[in-house]
Length: 287
Image 1: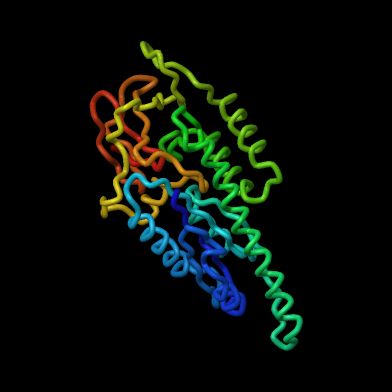
Image 2: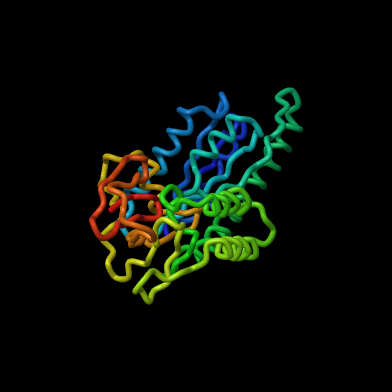
């Protein structure tokens, strides 16, 4: 499994201190993205990090499983919220408390930085451990609601499931318990069903049956499609830090009436469908 660790929101003194640590300690056998924020979270800063994460994903083999993980300083302001939203739902985030830096007291500053380093090292270990656990629920052959496409599965229950995991998976004491409970709650509201004349189970939002494609794995997002925003590829490879099969998609048929002429793809562009069915990948790519 390949993975990217992003450490974001560092004031310059903290960045300078963290930069002295071997990247192999922070992201063993992974890729580290580390960048200071002297002016706080900005759109340019966010775009730069996403571009670096995208470049790593592009450099991988097409089928290499990828986990994207984020350790960020939480300033509890609107800029932080906007920054975090840019990584939903492909990233596993863990927040860090802002560091109190007193440049007038060298000893206190050194102690604060040393404590912050300990938190960063612990945070990166937690990211790896929790991403592996999440992958146990996403990188599977059976249908799982964790991989449903957020835009085309038209149910507020899916958004509730994914956002709960996105905001709590990095900090909850028992992650497995949280995942299992959220999946049960979702399936209680959107149970597995069978489409007419189909012996396979599906998931349904009342508009489409989302069925497993079986061995037909052609309707997925390919990394060499340069007509998409950078996050389309990231969403096509990682779900809340959990890996999944790159060529997985849902084979969808209507639950009522006929298919619409088009469905919005991963970046909101209306895309025409086949007469009989529509292939929708977890990142909302229409194949």
